[in-house]
Length: 453
Image (cartoon, rainbow, N blue to C red; front, side, top):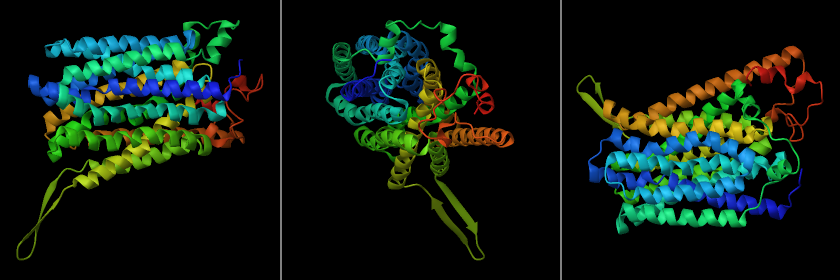
């Protein structure tokens, strides 16, 4: 295996992070221009939710084959061509004149979301296992692109209209695509394959997907990433509807959620390296359950029938309290996003693209399903806070499954009177699976890992 220098590592990480930031900004563009489009076409909340969610669908599904292509051909060309293709789709979107045409165009815009798994596989290939959590945390901070859109796009929208805003986004992304192809270098894993390693078949690449553990990781990511994307899209509309804000103010406040949910991913990567990804996931889900429970409570008036008269009072969440809670939720979700992807190169070092693609696809589908569901819940219940009620249920389910799986794995270890070193959260950075396994030791797979841990 070719050993990269520190300069090469920093170059690869910087380019991939910048590229992912711009892709993410494009991916969430409908959170702002969608509001103007809804006004122009008279869309319902359900129709607006579908328009916001459609790019997320493409970005989610594309992650599977983009991850496989990156494993096969390397991230440099896949990333660059992806950005150029997406830029063309964003530009063509501006010629749409009907809702159906916009939905079709949104499918092409969604390719930007597939950049995540390309960048994960490309970035992980440059770093040794003990530092992959931090590196992927820095790369994942490119989620801040949604804050770039929430903060900057409203001003472009007011000044130039949604069509010109989309054209500006397309131009910037096209320039970045060309720059990445020119400036990025081939990653060490791809170079090693070209030097003589036999290319694995498609079925060999997909072999790890038989593990239940992969799908549990996917549920984690459905919440920490899918719900993050959904809220990044939905928050401006929510703030306008609940607190009566204008679009620029709503966009800036929404950035207070998306910025920490992006930048603190770096801290999440470091904490996953230092304290273990499992422990970080516990912190994430416990805090998320608490925050979404409080955010779920709708404005309510109470009447207490007293001895002499009725006592009336009202519970209502003020804007400052809402901002504080959404900031806290974003912070812990950012830690969780980094922790989930810390697991993948550790458990599946030779299948980062395939496994990461599936986990990213399921997480991205959360970003598609949830905004649409938010709109449907609004239309059916008439309660704005119904979106947080749904998020509360998902967070509780993920926490319960994780805790059950961990306890089950520990019982297997106690019964066998041995500690399994394929659990990175319970071992030192030098004991990564399968690098620490000796030939003939349980076939390279422990009983606890077979149990879906």
